[in-house]
Length: 354
Image (cartoon, rainbow, N blue to C red):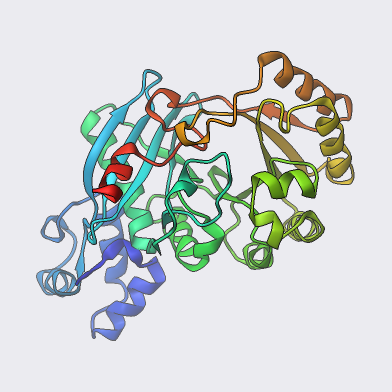
């Protein structure tokens, strides 16, 4: 089976051409064809000679994802269900913000983290996505925008779809190097955010890498007892291990981090938990922002309900009182199950059971 051309970074493509006896310099023309002209066939690369095109066609393919289903929300959010070459299904979401167009990409088929409130973990992980499959999600969304004819261009990326990005670290890293390359999509690192549930063993790798992108940590509880109850990963990586890993990132990257906190009615949204969270973050308050996330309904997790507006406001006010930077996430695509914690298509369920 031919591999995806999107799976190569610019340097990897240049190295491959050299290994094939071709010129490294041709990588730039191929790259521009892929990411600037956005060709969907090697034959459409006008700046690449026939011999090199033949070589590319022999070893690679451009499109490996097939659009299975597309849903559009009332707020303009678009959720794509893509079928991979092996038949597996994944989801990708386009969100329209005032500051630009953001794409939420998936990194794994299924998820093993198993957060008790999240739809993505309802289907166990079967495999990692390749960097080509992750990159092509972005390109397929860009093709959609090109077809809209409004001049829309993907400007922001959130690696927050199905799966745990740190559990697919190498492919995720290659994807980021590809899309931020200034000769291609040229998406600035400050416009890219990677979210992790807290795989402590990868924080140093992420911090010491050349990625330079934003980091968001799914915390969702201020103490071990509660976090272990709603996030099984906390049993392996409790707060005593997670917080020092976060500190390493803050100290060595000199970048702020986002602390994600989904609000579950009567579970983690009470004043005492807000105070605990403020105390946990007190020595880090100059370097973190808490993003409060209203819970989005998931049929299979009916034990959880959305916090009331009053409780969300009270939680917010307590954090502000303790001088913790805090915001409340704006929702996108809740009506099509495309919002935070909802990614796990019902079509995907049907395919799994069928």
